[in-house]
Length: 341
Image 1 (cartoon, rainbow, N blue to C red):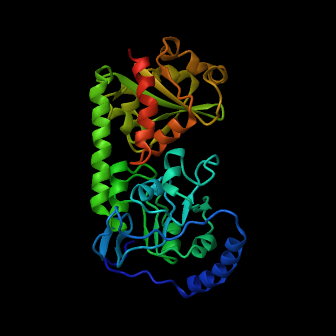
Image 2 (cartoon, rainbow, N blue to C red; image 1 turned 90 degrees about the vertical axis):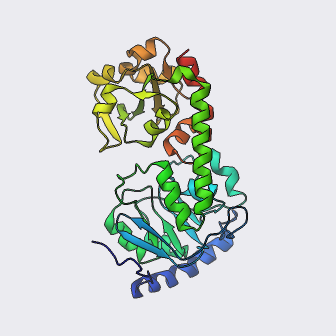
Image 3 (cartoon, one colour; image 1 turned 135 degrees about the horizontal axis):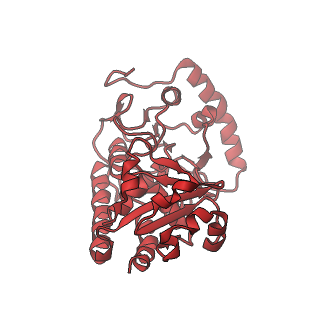
């Protein structure tokens, strides 16, 4: 099911009524709040406003954006990072990690300035979405659910999961291009991509020991272990540093970004270097005690297990955006170099 290329997205009668009802109450609540809410980001400036209209493609068809958006709502998992890198503070963000009190990672806090976006969590409250009065919704790094998408488009023009992309695994270059084009800052988007590629290339050249060494990335969660596939942005980032996926990881394919790893198969995830992420903020010794199957891996016994002590490094790796990648690389580079020396 697709929509005409140039179709406009006015609010439906129901959407208008809902929007009108909730804006009044939201304005009252905002007046009582202590934090400064996010306000429309001024177009232009160093970011450079583009020429409109622009049209971008997503899974559901074409989205025509007639003019410079002034109130952009970010609902994709890491879409706000791209917006902030472009100089745009969204009116609301998906807080996918509870510790992100302002809805963004530590690497993005400075880009917020004194503004605090509204916090949203899935399943999204569509009345809350409407209350923010967005003129553009970006839901690029998402699951691509059509029902959710159609409901959002009744509120404002929405850019969803890119055409051909797997849910929640949009490569960072693609998400940057889609979002920067939608907000009229495609040139700056390409500059950010070039800067990030240069950083990754320089890091790889600075660490020739990374070249050709195998890597796997594990996640310890709720007593279970998961492993990221080559379809995941985390693996795509570390392989850009010269590392290579193991045969086991390659064999998992790219259809899913993540697979659960049974205790008896933990050994198959062994690699020259194993990056371990955890949902629990515990020291490495406590984590290995809780997950003896990881402690039994050769990489763990030979000190080739990389476990970022700073949780923000793992979160930045997971976000894999033009804004988070520098933070992830800065934290991971010395750990990888130590493990592979």
